[in-house]
Length: 208
Ligand code: MN
Image (cartoon, rainbow, N blue to C red; front, side):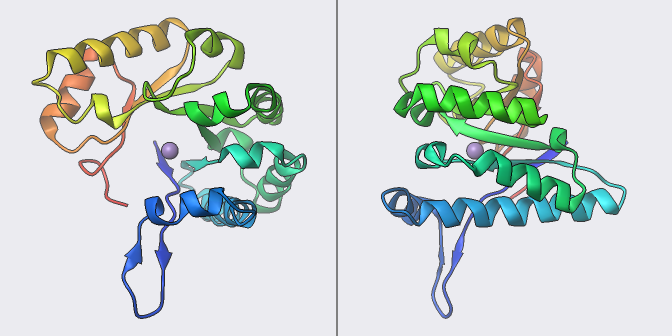
């Protein structure tokens, strides 16, 4: 049903750098701005290729807290979608709870503008940040992504099962789609299916 754009840094002659080793550095500098634009450009171009091939797929792109201050980001996203002929409904922008809480006012503005554009909005890594449940109501998001930390010990951990189940039920009641992250085994997939989780992602489905 969809894919998530995940950035890696391929340095000539050296090992492939995972995002944890350079995205936090980029986020502390202005480099996060061109990096996010680059990922958006590549992801939307790929969505256009799939769209023209008659196999439209939803594409998710992660956006950082520092991107929230870019007044022209949503306009730029709209232009990229137009240029590639991709319906906005095929693009989902992911913001972590930490990002939302870093600047709730700016986050609400950006999410509203993305929704006006017709794009989808997801809260990423849900359950690990410090957000309040009242923000779920205020932000009006499409998708809640259940953090992998509640998935990895499924189905054995009764605590994680209780938390995952509660999040899935709450999200459904609020009209949101749930996506479980970090699914690596058939047993995890089955447990999440039984809980009513809408979608899953992770190594069991497809490797980066
Ligand atoms: Mn994500």
